[in-house]
Amino acid sequence: MKLLHGRLYRLSLNEHKQYINNTGKMLLANEVSNELISQLHSHFMMKNNKSYAQFSSELDDSFEQALRSWVSKADNFVHFSQYIFDLLIQNISQYHFMDSGYFLIAEYQHVTGQFLLLTILQPKSSLFVNDSMDIEDIDYLDLNNLQLTVMIDLFKWQEERDLHQYISFIKGRLGRKVSDFFFDFLGCKEALNVKEQNKMMLDALSKCINHSDLDEQEKEIQRENILDYCVTQQKNHNIIELSEITEKLSEQGVQNFSDFITENECMAEAFPADLSTIKQLKKMTGSGGGVTIGFDAILLGERVIWNEEEDRLVILGVPPNLKEQLKRRKLR
Image (cartoon, rainbow, N blue to C red):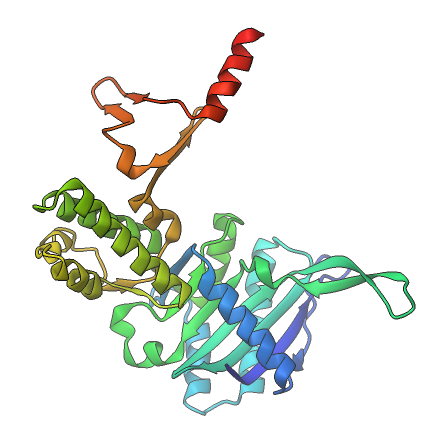
């Protein structure tokens, strides 16, 4: 991981509740800055709730035009980053969902790729013991809780635009308001819903395996193999390749996965793994109306019986800890 350019800006309000413009400060190209970018990249890539976006001609193209000017060397990073921060201030003022923080814009290299990272970092307070054994307050950057972050793959943006996978962002839990802010700021719209892609892949995979000639144990082995593949891809910051899944299934005698894929024209050839969805290969979970249920998928039809017509789920062999709770409640 190597930082090429980076600039940090403070986000704060004046007495009129307006964001204060400032010139920020360039990050030094040293080990600390490289470590900061490395951690940000790792935390971002490990997020399950990412999605893809693309620049839209229907929206304000100020950001993309500035990006194009900088990449073509018509502008330098100092001017480019300042223009982007000014643009951020204009857009964030319309939403006003935070009072303070830091905005970081950084260009860096990772392996053979070149990326532009834009993130709003929130400071958090903690306590530490100084050299005199006194306890003091300290503010630190909460890197583990990344939410307002966008990563642009500069190579894909220039060379593989048609894939619509050059802008990745975190679909955070801060609400639609925040997503709208970033879309307006960048002039982009969602291009690929990662969770939906994983669901479609899971549906195609389930149909493929269920229609195969494998026995139940062999089917379960195939599900576990694909789950292991997806988890490994996610841990290694790699994407799921449908061609690789097709190859893995073919090696085990399951030849027609591609037929089930083509049933859905909206499926991409590659996308990041969403572990909360992928784990449904192994676990079945659900909640609603005050009820939460979870069990190993292999138990369906054995210890867990589903009656679709009557909307009923029968569990044979109540878990011991649940049984004890039921007994205690009965005695009241």
